[in-house]
Length: 146
Ligand code: SF4
Ligand code: SF4
Image (cartoon, rainbow, N blue to C red):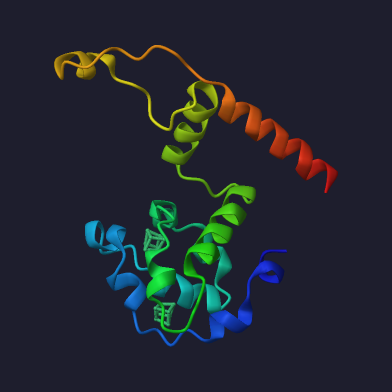
């Protein structure tokens, strides 16, 4: 399913110039996150290995890499798809699980620290939103239909 969805022809166009990685803000913060290396592994068919790489989840899907690629490789989409497949396969880092649960419960990725807000002179945030949970439910129902 995963390899079927991947655009293998486009992946073959990658000549490992590294322009995607050199423009990536996450790579600047964490040198171990290198999109071009992930693409190389994906292109080699090392899917099992890629799914277990935690840094895969650091991508912010900013699309800078895709815009910089001279070969038009849709890097962000490939990483996105790989992450979705990792999720389906149960290869999810603990932080991502916490973020998902917090998002479903409150509509936010991270819990609000009202003590810190108070120190910064900001008003407390108490309201929670179930919009994310509703979207998640609809997506789940649609997936069952497809
Ligand atoms: S910028 Fe494009 S061609 Fe260069 S390494 Fe990244 S994906 Fe490959
Ligand atoms: S989409 Fe992801 S991999 Fe690409 S530049 Fe942005 S953070 Fe880096």
